[in-house]
Image (tube, helix red, strand yellow):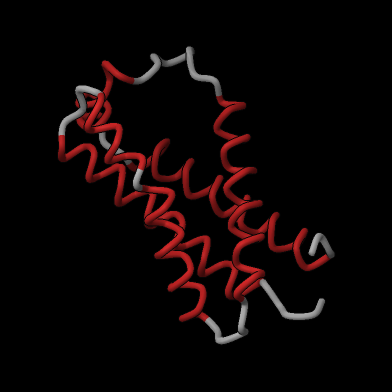
Length: 134
């Protein structure tokens, strides 16, 4: 299963997750969002960016691996369906965070939705890049 197709798909998903994360978390989110969750996040300059990269590597690997098991070559719909259900798995820990940390519920839903959408986009990329038998 670790063939040329897997590696190409892995890099496509990794780049997608990394760029999506940078654009959303680094460029688009308003300061008010960070103010709402700021007490629970590391301050500027105290981040451990390597762990974000490691997280994206693991997510990309798992997504491509799982997608390959059920791949039927049915196009974009297959990728969106896969991304939605995988996204639910990856986003659900945000709900646990709400249960155990003092984070506002609307911030929790915001993070849940962003994480879900990022994996749906990754599923879409997989549907476009992954080919059977390469």
